[in-house]
Image (cartoon, rainbow, N blue to C red; front, side, top):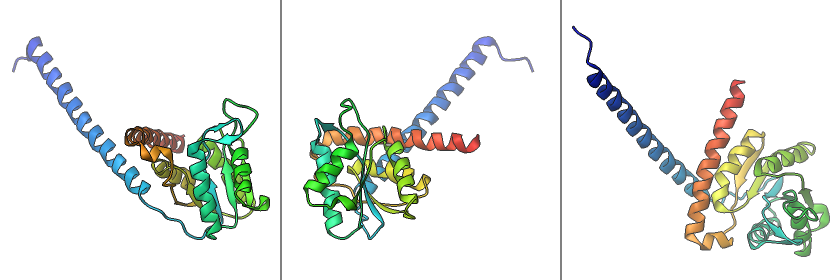
Length: 213
């Protein structure tokens, strides 16, 4: 049987590539939609329970004062502390553009101003990302023999935080704040959810690559 002519071969290659791209598009759509649903499902859950420590993820502060988003996270964490969920509150986050203050330090000062005793607050002030903060928190807690934590942040953040905490050997549950300004802006919240889809994907792929090395 004679080989296919070049035009016929080129058409078959084109069709194969087109079909593969279509399959890739379907897979990507299913993956993004599925992960978005998982993130949204986790965001809707409050898993607060008695633990060793409440961990508040830091975010922007301005001139030593927490941003509205950080204050909402801290207020929720303080409420959990007052309910007896844990005897210790952990504030997190390093310095951003303003090197005079750290998110963890600002969180500690804010919590003390709301009546949380200084002795009941640990502050992690070296993390430049969520993962670095949780890694530092894991070291702080391990030195005290603690592993059980409640994570406090914005709802869309919970899935990735739990994955990271599990990877660091912690036993996390999630209790998102419901009063963050982001939660009152659906477009902004959807943007952050989609950003978390990318963040979770990068984290999982990074962990998989490291496990193969």
